[in-house]
Length: 493
Image (cartoon, rainbow, N blue to C red; front, top):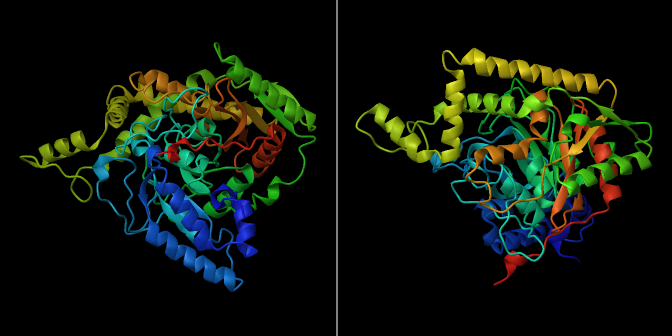
């Protein structure tokens, strides 16, 4: 029997049902892997007893022939999904000691379908970051290293813990969230598959909010099929979230089968950026050729308002963040720092509880919402957002999916951009448009850089047509023929 942590979700489900190993054995293998990977700093809480209890229940169900869709599959949970009685702090000091008395809808759906919770995963504070360096618990380290170098690399953000844990085989899949690229960019940096579904496909109830009109739950896994299996369980209507679509959830894994002959794939000309690294441009061209060889038609499309997406995003997202984060004041839960009066207590708590990047975005957001600036900034950014959505609507009249790069570079070194927020924000250049338009997107590994690091492509789908997007992704995955795994340097003594 191979190392149990090397199995995909699909293979583990089959092995469990065939009695090749037990859910407890599978869970214990992953707990041991977590224990040996402290140098990655991927987990902020490991729920050993809960995991073994859930695995025991899965073994009972497997023995009685009552297996659920994800029975016995060990997964990690990003720290912004509320988990009943378990550490939930969104990577922030201001939520010290917070253990919810309720479960997020997404995680409740996973437990309903038999998944096993291994623990909570590190992340950028309140999901604000592209490198997982803003976490109160310190940065996550990418399990990948550049050839000939021991320099620690970022796993991307904000779902850096989710991506690193899946890439390092610490969990079989992980929940994640995406506000401007926080699933797809970390997946690209770690050689994993990251799916951001359509806004409203998954409930946001029980997720710690960053920007409510942009946030969407999703998944990071090792393969497209694994991501599809997870998404089918995570998604679905929820009366507790009025923005959650009241639509049936397709069998995304079943939708992967079949060819793409006759489909039309769009290449947005505005994504051809000046100064794009040659290896990124070459991979993009290779991806188009792979799809063309399978019978898809490749056409160029225009998304003319793309150049305004990043500045508009960094007005809208901080504005919503400044509103959402106003609830953290030290009164009812989390950190409280004393002051001489109520106002000083608020000020002291927020000054100590929020990190620099969160403070930066709250200040930006409060400014653009203030009297005299609301029309000039926030209202104008929302108008731009409408134009971006119209660009996509026009393009999707001609094409089934869009193909783009996922990131402008492979993973960079920790600390390389931490003093240059603008350069850090540019990491989202290929991903923010998808959030602004509420569309589904998937990043999947398609090659390696000159330094041996993963490179990824992105597919963008029509609203609530994740099935078609994932089918095309599966064909790209087959054409790339990669089975990426970093060397386990973190296990060395």
